[in-house]
Length: 287
Image (tube, rainbow, N blue to C red; front, side):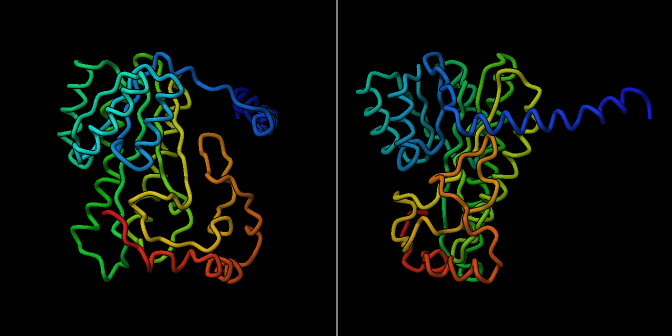
């Protein structure tokens, strides 16, 4: 073992201690927010649901420009007009993120007409809401193409320029179901788990890239059209994974995972009580 290797081994405990202390301090101290005044934000699935709410929040927080992508022009236009009334420049483009060529072509149009995207929010998603044996094959493929592969195409389209500018952020609106699946939505859980792995690998690949980072958000049940009819008795006792406060990953709501030390059968009883295992029985959402 050469001196360089020996030095690395001796330095490792101090590095671990440093980053542990740093993470602990970040947990208790408020993080500084990014100044959005110079940012061009693109939100996929921006016409309704979480995407529409995010557009409002980015506008209120002072984003320079907003770009909305989606498959339904009516929803995109309505949201775009609403954002414009808030005083923020907003553009919309009909784009299906599952269509690779369409994503790449629209990305070129955006660079020419609007400018460089510095914040990409991968929010577009669909849910079929059925068990494996009750699911249509094409519907299963649709979920994977939009929820997972769509992020590959959008990130490949915009990340290179972010790296050139040394300025950018990739956000993924994922789901707690990527870590704690439930019955009746096998397409969604699988695609979100793939999406989570994509973002974890992407984050590691960007560690040495100055000015460019990424964040994954894992919401629990959201009151949107897509999950209409889904019923949960106790949202706070639904599936919650351990280690959810890692930097770069945001769990909402931030409920302490007090059940993580329990055996699997005990956890199953808690999830049954909360309604997590039967919440899709009344599902009537949008696919």
